[in-house]
Image (cartoon, rainbow, N blue to C red; front, side, top):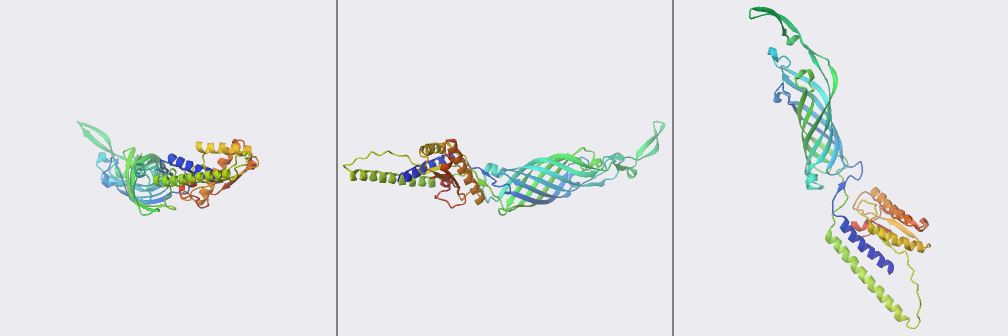
Length: 401
């Protein structure tokens, strides 16, 4: 009877503690393997080079990305992209009114993006959301084999001006050639926005716009030292295993918890009534003989509750451990089985088993720190067992009995 009273009291106190502790919702990737994705895209790019009109600078663009979202808001990715860059211009022969010609260089580039899911940031994470908007920013590097300068060719012509004759060099575009053709790594930066339309937890359609600033990919073909690029692409993303985020501090169903509290209150009140009736019956059964009974404290069942995903003992739990340690030290023949549990609704079987063992170990270590002989303690991890109680929050517990 006393054991039942102790356990019901602790469950009642633990339920109240869980309600007060879990108020803010957070999520994270349970494993490093979760929320890894690969994306492919294709579209067009254009440069804002001063030597040519934007409409004449459009070229195809393809990209492949691999990345991971660590939380529903924050992620990162690496992207390889490229094809070629071109423009139609008469640089560097505009002084002789040379006709415009097409200049182009093949290249590839690498983007390292930090990613922020704006939808989850401002609206909260919701599994199954169809539309999401992402912001990304980071350094870039373009690798290209281009020309650095020109070997200009001039024809000598006699020119008469103000009655004087002198020789003037006239630039000849057809005989001028670019020089210093070398591979160069051009470091820049970029940022952009991406719209994601989720088909299911694994597949999504992407539309992205990116702005980039980089040293000129066209090199000697351009008068500008720096180019601005605009990338517009559409593609698809595949998330391996689907999106998987585990809630750190799930919102509590208040009405359900209140029902659970009332249930334990009623059971506790009934147990107290039954105990009082039993005591009265014992007194009435022995009206003449009086026995002096020394009350011996016993190591009855106790419960230590934990926050979701945590193996840290709070102040309420330490009070229970200190009381139980006092009893165990006074009764060296008594033993406790320390059994850790997890709720099955959160995490994988492997994760729950490891977490239940960590919780049991934390309680075990606390007993040792309080001076309890380790021979009086036995560790058990029950992460993979079915839930003992109706509500998930009550199964994040270590039971000592």
